[in-house]
Amino acid sequence: MTTFTRGFRGRRRGGDDRLPPGQYLTEDFPVLSAGPTPDVPPDRWEFAIHTETGQAHRWTWQELMALPYETPTVDIHCVTTWSKLDTTWQGVSLDVLFEDVETAAEYALVHSYGGYTTNLPLEDLLDGKAWIAYRYEGEELAPVHGGPARLLVPHLYFWKSAKWVRGIRLLTEDWPGFWETAGYHNYGDPWREQRYADD
Amino acid sequence: MSADYLDGNALAGPLAEIFATDVSAAVGRCASCGLTGPVASLRVYSRAPGLVARCPGCEEVVLRLVRSPDAAWLDLRGAVCLRIPLGGP
Image 1 (cartoon, one colour):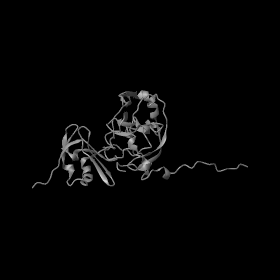
Image 2 (cartoon, each protein chain N blue to C red):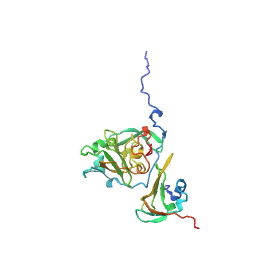
Image 3 (cartoon, chains in turn orange, purple):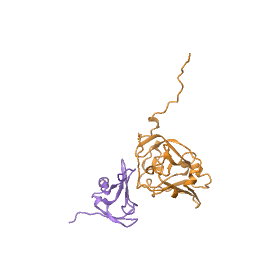
Image 4 (cartoon, each protein chain N blue to C red):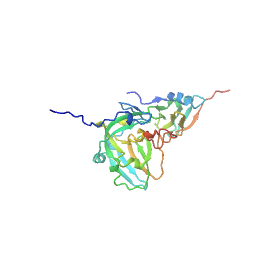
């Protein structure tokens, strides 16, 4: 006789305990943008890390594609209160890009094609917490979602995950970015609901 | 495809909370390219964490407005000056 035992199936966490305070779940992927979508063909795409001493580390699209990639599945949280669970991406970990970068800087200012900027502590980009992502849900990343490549820093509100990412400037002093100079929180931790500058 | 921005009249309501007059009728000069025109002619990107109004000539940011539950942040550094029409005598 075959006995069926109820296996321990590792309860898939429902939405509630994965939703930061003040957020609601969405199934679609809203498009938010502070300006027109830049047209960045991969053959003209370049990504650069500039250190505080003036050194530049550059990658072409082909060079980025040749680097080892990861396929993170992450929850994302937009400051406009939507959250989306289990989004799947493909991209290069910032740990790979920073391998040969020598820096004593503590701050990063991320900049994008189209002029957008956002700031965060350098440590929030390292140790498996951030990627340059170029595929979403198995497809090339659409331009409206930041294609050809965007920053992905899912543990902070999604405005930190700069679309159309072009480079990172390492700084010894913090320099607030586009939304951080217009009333939004300098750090933006969704679990502490750091939406606005005075939160 | 629908435009991903609205015209500057979309600023009238949100700015009415801050200014005593209708600023969408004010005429400003883009700090980037010098184009002069009414606030109503700006391109307003509203599907964003705030309102971002860009110059129709050079697409640089002229005005930004962020509203939290208890405050507003207004950035006008992309506008050289606004001529705000007021009632005459």
